[in-house]
Image (cartoon, rainbow, N blue to C red; front, top):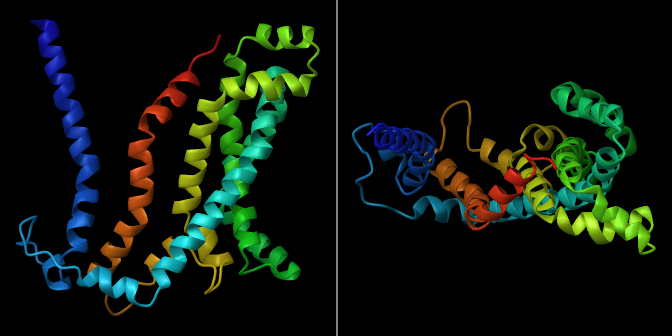
Amino acid sequence: MNRTLWTALRALAITVVCLIIAMPVVWMIAAAFKTNVQVTDPTVGLVFSPTLENFRTVLADGEIVRSLGNSALVGIVSTVLSALIAVPAAWAVGRFRMHSTGSLVLVARIVPAISLLVPWYYLFAQLGLVGSYTVLVLSHMFVSVPLILWIMIGFFEGLPIELEEAGHVDGLTAFGAFRRIALPLAAPGTATASVLAFIFSWNNFMFALILSDEDTKTMPVTLFNFISYASTDWGGLMAAATLMTLPVLVAAVLGQKYLVAGLTAGATKG
């Protein structure tokens, strides 16, 4: 009886948490199919006559499509470059126990990003890079590299060192053992860390707001443009937010099994 009660309470708690998390997303998607009057009317819930006018409006001038492309470009390039730098670094830190070096890199995650915007803007302005994709990629890498590094350290520390030692016996160099043995075994962790880094880049607002221009602005900045001092286009804002959320949501659902496997594998050692 106690076990049955515990199972029921756990299921109830999980259901409540899922509902709390899902409600804002459900409201956002529902509001995307409402008129502005319906969005601001508290009597209109989930039962209403849907309209596609909001989507037609936000897609009419092509700005949303361009911003989605910018977000995808910056996110993919920054994630790939961060993984190329951070994964070998994480293997070196984890395998050779260079935790002091790893802690130094972690400072990049501790320092508030907003404190770096003024010097970054001044530096990149002097180099003529403000408003380019390069400055967005570099600024996102400043956060993505430490993120991937610290996730992957746990994976490489959990791999049996005997596997790499066996590779050394067969004539592999240290880097060869990393490339042929450690890296394939840590593929779930690499995928997990890369997805998390990409989601950070996709959702980042502050860097793009300051360092991008009209041609390179990403989706979060475009969403911000729906808010004005006098009024807010709630229907258009929710439609654009739905379009921004959908790719990440689909990727998370399709890759859920691999993400869970990667996170749980990185939580254990030995």
